[in-house]
Image (cartoon, rainbow, N blue to C red):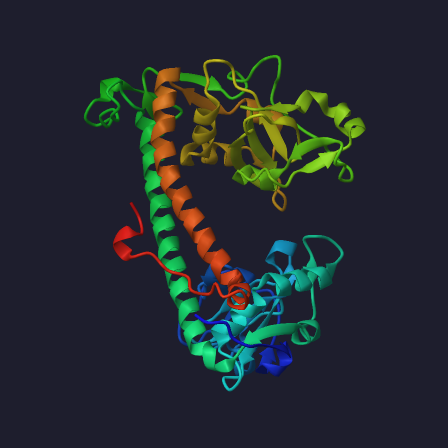
Length: 435
């Protein structure tokens, strides 16, 4: 695709209508009949695409407001919430009727005489525009940020020649369709993983590498504990008993203080998704008061406050500490860290953790009760075999997530690609997409 002339517009020059709706208390359910209207949640607007199923039902007096009804071809931008959820842009390729924008977003109806909605969404997603939006977003806390409609409408947007829009729009649609297919595959693999983990943590693996026969076929291979069937060879312990006695389960820094690059890295809940590039660093004077919770590679980390039950293993070479919202579990020698991580992620163990949660508005796990949670441990060799089975399906999911990230980077950087002559982005042939 050849380079093209780029013009700069204020956003309000590219749309003939903008809209924001109310944010009343709603019923947390989807529309159930043709009379009801739905109000969009911000989760309907995500970088991976438009999700019209993410809505709720407002009180009846808010229904039938056609002035804020979303239509095919609209562009929606989130404008309130946590920093990472503000400024998210989505193009509405298809939509059911009777869905309205809420007060936490702005709906844009592009002027078809000057811009293709897909091109406008890509332009608003560009790095330059996103950085500008982020720099002007304000609020009392990182979790409560916002910007005004007027600010967004006056934002400058770079748009290529209008005659190029059909070709660019088609390219964007191809990327969006590829992203949708990849998301569906990820969802499929995630469901397969749930089934695999259910089998692995109830039947285990024999020396031949296969699952044990089901209980109804070979009941002599199983024992029953608190209503749960598990292999006879497995030990029944508590989480406290399989933790290094010299380093008991504990949480970390209550107040980590301001960022100090010369300080100590602190792992927080958001890092437990395997993302350790962006860590908070606390001053050594503050961290030294929490030496009991220091973390090293191989420690199992469990979120115990607000978002309860997220698990990961401290990465290779790590030396630091954890926040108050994370518990450190240092397993004894015959319990493998990755096995313990996968076990705690299993459906059964997640239910066990939820049994001991306290608090209704902000959930929390007590360390003392956490130590008493029953846990079932096979021999190290079987632990390793189970790890490998889960690793295999995780690798499939990871590969697709990486590919999806590339697609989304291509979409968000499309305006830059046009300017530099790199807008021709090939998609995979269907038969080569997944191996």
